[in-house]
Length: 324
Image (spheres, rainbow, N blue to C red):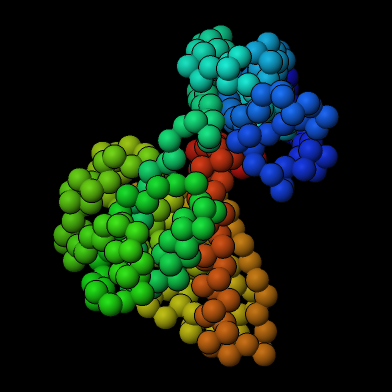
């Protein structure tokens, strides 16, 4: 295969997935006595070769599974294939352990760089820690998203370099839901990275919800060894410092935005997951300008977190991502 391609198929509208749970799905027309089907996701990243998609489909079909949607992309530069498949299956006919073994065989067959399968109804939720500073908007949005079941994660703790009093909204929320809060005062000379590592070693990934800190060190990222997701406003690099929104407002900016990305040693320069923009005008005052900017940050970060949990984001080349 020598040219980039993208194949996409989805039967979700026909099957009515938007209004029902994947965890106990029955195909239309099935008798009520038929077993419920369970929803699964598989992502694959390997050198491109003839027959990969056919083998993936055969693997799922041979165990009685049914593919609901499939995305495939081949990088033009490196001739590497990326794929993501959604499928339903009967866990009695295809036990979870057997599923891992089947996909492992394919991984070895095609020398896969990455092969991950996830069954949300059977697998543990992703464990995350949230790092935040004084600004609450992204942190509060994530907490409410978690409480309402919109974010498929378990929050192990919140870490902050800003002290919050016991009667604040955030602290009352955390205490009610038994989420630990760790205040670690930081300086440029001491970022308390060793203590942060001790608090997050058992997490699956980290979320920086407007964590106003110097760039995390390479030593921290290497020791942690897992993904870290960050959000920043789209006013960089033109408007820096403590009042970027006011600077942009005074400059008459017409488009504002937000970027969610993976964290690297270089500040705000990791592989991008999602970007969102919104128009502002002369009718906006500073308050509405800031509110629009904060809303974009909340939406962009929450979307990146959901996509990451749904295995939609794959690293591509040096500093890019494939987002299915």
